[in-house]
Amino acid sequence: MIYFLSDAHLGSRVINDPSAHQKKLVMLLEKMSNDATSIFLLGDIFDFWFEYFWSDKSKKEYILLLNTLKKITQSGISVHFFIGNHDLWTFGWLARQTGIQVHRQPQSMLLNNKRVYLAHGDGLIPKTFFHTLPPAIKKKINHFILLRKIFHHPIPQFLFRLIPPTLGNHFGYEWAKRSRLKEIAHPCEYKGEGNEELVLYAKEKEQEGDHHDYYIFGHRHIELDLMLPSKSRVVLLGDCWRQWTYAQIDEQGHCLLNTFENE
Image: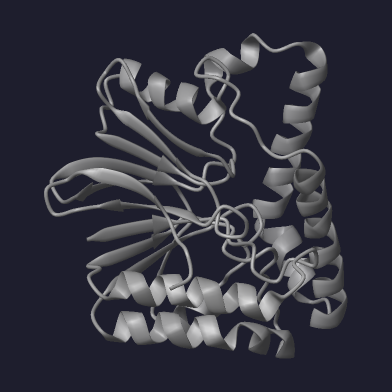
């Protein structure tokens, strides 16, 4: 079995019991490891993650998860970590501690004889969609694109790594907190097939002749399994901080969305 999950947002300052949240995620990973050949973490596992030049004692907050990931990879199960827009600032430490494989770009993989396109989902803006938007929305998207370029640029990353972790983490978690509060006040909703950016992005790739059986994304915090005219399926994973949804592909190549409940 191959498993996919995303958007746990561990450490979020709006979660009432961060320890219980982390334990539940570990329970899910341990359950998956019973029959998994691979586990894919499709971004925003952490609400904020940054690796500084200095020792960061706050990483001990995640010792339960880190030890679990290490145990899973040492058992022979491959764990793939796709950076999200909240946890892209890993520079090797996370991989060394846990044995995971880090991916910084979308990947096309053959999984159980199915061609699967995998990404967190941020920054995947369909070309045709952008040109049809009203000016106010275009302005917001352009602002997001600029901010994303800054976050991914090596010079700002280098400079931020010089900041003492206490200060850097305070800024990062407070910045991330605003996103969670906004989502609580206005939960993400399905926009419809003609307006969902990641659905339109998958359709563009299909029209270009780059066929995949499945497109699996995180980021949107909604659960979706949509068949496209090309017989591809777009799967949006939901999240693992409120919905606790995930996907799996079995040995026959069938994909299924599930909800995790505590045993």
